[in-house]
Amino acid sequence: MPSTHVMQFQSEELRQIKSIAGSEADCAVLMLNQNRYHPAAGFPHGEEYQAYMRVLASTVAQVGGQVLWRTPVHGQPLGCEHDFIHEILAIWYPSYAAFVSLAKAEGAKDMLRRRERCVAHAVLHRCPGDSYPLQP
Image (cartoon, rainbow, N blue to C red; front, side):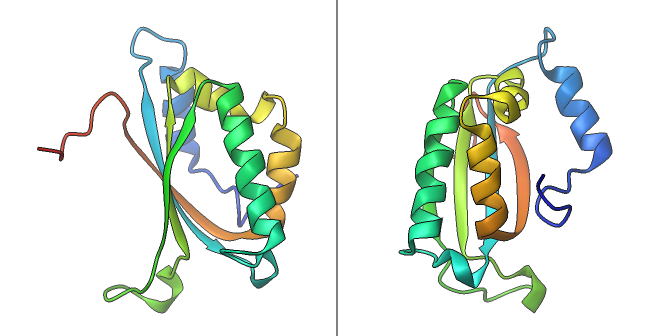
C-alpha cells in the first residue's frame, strides 16, 4: 500500500473526481504530475526509475490513457526549497472514469509498488483534457 506522503489525495478533490467519473459531465482529463524522486530511484537514468516509467506507461495505456510528455526540471528560480521537483509529466486520460479505474488496471499493483520506491513527493494537477487552451 502506498504511503500517505506519496498518495495523499485531497478528500474533497477526490470526491469531485469520482462524482464526475461516469456521469454526463465525464470528459477527457489531463493530469499534470510534479514529482520529486528518492535518490535510490536514480532519476533520470537509474534502473528503478526507468522500470517505473515503463510500467507507468503500460498501465496508463490499459485504461486508454497516454503519457504525453515528460521533462526534467533543471532548476527552480522561484519558490521554497521544499517545492523542488525533478520531473513534470503530462498524462492524458480519455475520461475521469478511466483515471479512477487506473488503480484496478492490469499492472496497477506493480506500478504502485514501483511508484512507492521511486517517488518521494508528488503533486498532481487536474487540467482540461479536451483541449489545450493556452496554445495558439
